[in-house]
Length: 148
Image (cartoon, rainbow, N blue to C red; front, side, top):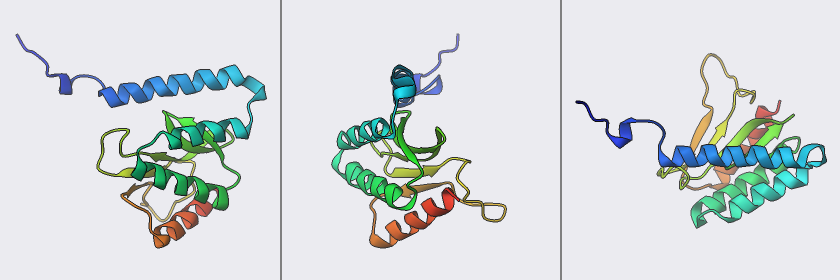
């Protein structure tokens, strides 16, 4: 008889929690329906950021400000319980806190809708342990490029 270890089967607790958060995000959006506004999404994102641990919160606040300054066409929304920024309802970029999946770094990720294409290979996610002024400049450039 073979026994399976808990870590070898299914999703992790963090992954299951993210899926539950995504389901709640979808329910909330459905309840709002056509009366949903960009402000609703921003309020949701700001509340999620405010609940983060200090180091993640500081980076998420900076990312949020950078998105607003460099890609104002993107609308804030929650995506799997993470701050995300969408164009026409589809996520272009997101911030994943280190705490969310018990990682050693946070992540700034871009979906395939982000027009970051450069040759035949380019990065679509970046590990973040802190943000320097130089990092913020690079992120601003990436955001402007991502929305075309």
